[in-house]
Image (tube, rainbow, N blue to C red; front, top):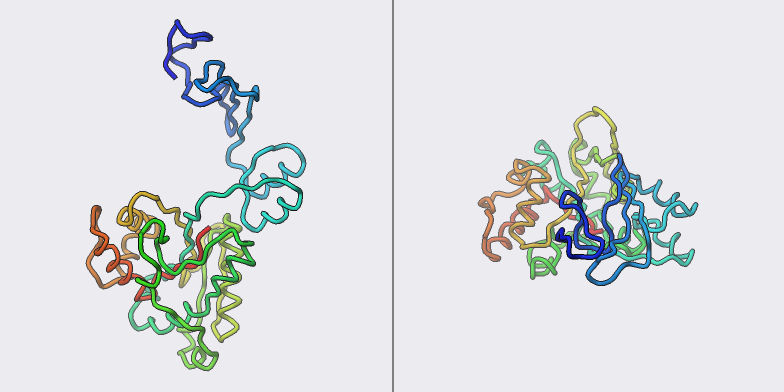
Length: 286
């Protein structure tokens, strides 16, 4: 909004106003009170006031909704059915959060590539998406979604069939044992990590899920959540590299480094190089 005395209900130039239907009435620690903007360009909203509370865990938000202390909350996918069965409406963004397995440098060496390839073959992405996350997720075999990259996963990712137990147990014991770390505060990621571990154990891998809140032994692989910027393929991959660590990304491929403004052909070759080493394994988009 623009301060001015000629407008009805004019305001001071020092106020935080904005151009939406509500303006800030009061800011407190962890809470913002908003009131209807009388001179909103599309007309005053019907609702007089809103109260927004920040930094509430997803579990607490759901409890607030069910006890009538909140009208609009954020949900994790596994709670969608519970909410819709109560007749409440659920809206979702595009699936721009990628959960990806990132192997630590000591397990990302070329000598461990066969074990990583077999581990990738144990992932049951369709079941994670349709059952565990109740259809509120998409299986991910590429780092970038096709609606952002313009190309399909088949162009950059090879198919990995599910391994047999005999194939896995033929590996040295050290190569078929993994500690999988997940963010302790991310309930969705934790449930996905548990499912990944269960599927891998069925064919002979030994997998321990680690969700530390403090110091913990070094893991072999991490399940990382990355929110991709829907701007351009090159920028999205560079952002992914920044979030998981540029050193990790450089270890994951033997090809040249990616730069901003790179052509789509360069992006395709870079992603193919990264995924071909199985040091990064896309799992799911939520």
